[in-house]
Amino acid sequence: MNGGDVVSLYEEDGFSAAKLFSQGYSYTYDDVIFLPHYIDFPTDAVSLTTKLTKNISLSIPCVSSPMDTVTESSMAAAMASLGGIGIIHSNNTPSQQASLLRAAKSHRFPFTSDLVFLSPFDSVTSADQFGSSPCIFVTESGSPQSKLFGLVSLSTWESLTPDDRESRRVSDYMMRIPGGPIKTLPNGSSLEDIASFLAAENLEFAPLVAEDGEEIVNVVSASRANSILNEFPKMQGVVPSVGPDGKFLVGASIGTRESDKERLAELVKGGVNVVVVDSSQGNSIYQLDMIKHAKRTYPGVDIIGGNVVTMAQARNLIQAGVDGLRVGMGSGSICTTQEVCAVGRGQNGVRVKKYRGMGSLEAMTKGSDARYLGDTSKLKIAQGVVGAVADKGSVLKFVPYTMQALKQGFQDLGASSLHSAHELLRSGVLRLEVRTGAAQVEGGVHGLVSYEKKPY
Image (cartoon, rainbow, N blue to C red; front, side, top):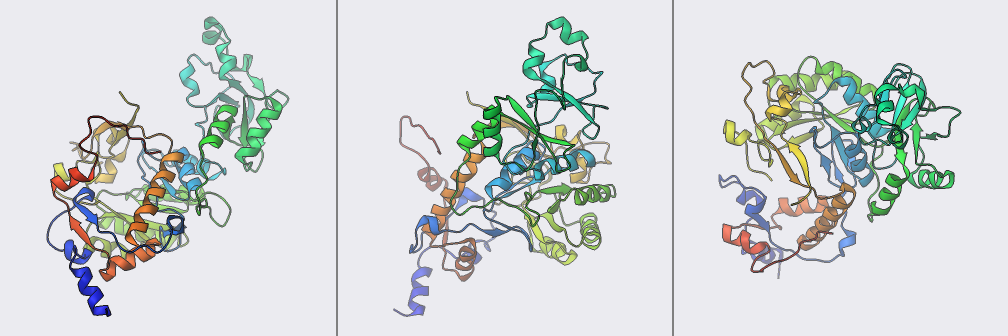
């Protein structure tokens, strides 16, 4: 059998990507399926290393979206620890976003706590004031940047009488630092070292301080440290995403307004590794101008442009100087751009998590309307909804499970890496078919009276 015979044999099954996607239809993930190819390697030999931009590589092809219900400091730290990257949203002030950026980059384990600060003259009247933190920090002015006086633990506050909680200032019952029973640790400490220290000292939690020994950047409780150690997986071949300085790779988004130039400057000062210019439709003069400004002013910072879904859109952003592209428009489960604007393209009794589109009216009231070029409009047109999605559990478990499933899928394709998958797709060796509605049903779980589905 010669090479020509092999090609003709492939041609008998399915379609090449070039042929399938040139027929004038808009497909989404369920509509198409790959046909299997030849396997000559084990699953663990599959490499998922990919290029995020021209200059940034990741060990897994995972990026968390710059949405205010998706990526803040904890998600960004978790994604970097798994080998991916998180893009911190910009639906906040520049200083707030820069603070989230610094928090994510400032340590070497996969979570951060939301730090709460009060002045010595403030009172704590509700447990809700603690947020997710086991303590509240007391500083001279009540801000993170001022001198640290002490802290109030949740357990100490709960031991007070209701009248004391209402009337007493935190300075009356806070644990003082230094000189008190609470000890701080360097933020570069490993999670294992922190857990061991807390156990040896019989401490409930420990604040972590920055390199200068002054600013509190995180707080770790013993229960949280042990929980993370127990559930944090060891994925074969995956290394954390860190930069030349040894810190986590973290991205952040900006808009296209003149004020976003100031936001960009704050992010660069905070050590951002990649900036996403975040627009629902990226092919605009506003985004092109922002890309050119960013590349001209900060040539060492990689810029991702978008969103785009056509070759013409992509070409304009590439010519403006972007280092990567964000693809997709109106295809998310909470995005209604295709429904409302008739513009876009097909892509790709439970615990629930709040989830909202950045084009929802709720998100727009926080400032995301600029993303839709509608911040000056008197009438706001929603291009997204607010809802809830099933909680899939810790990202530290869900991402490794998904990556292992991806490796097995690549093995079935006969692709040992993302690069080889691209080559097989471009050459026409990988074949695809369109699935009818009946085929999609058949491909899922069916024909059972009941079943339990546990992914991991």
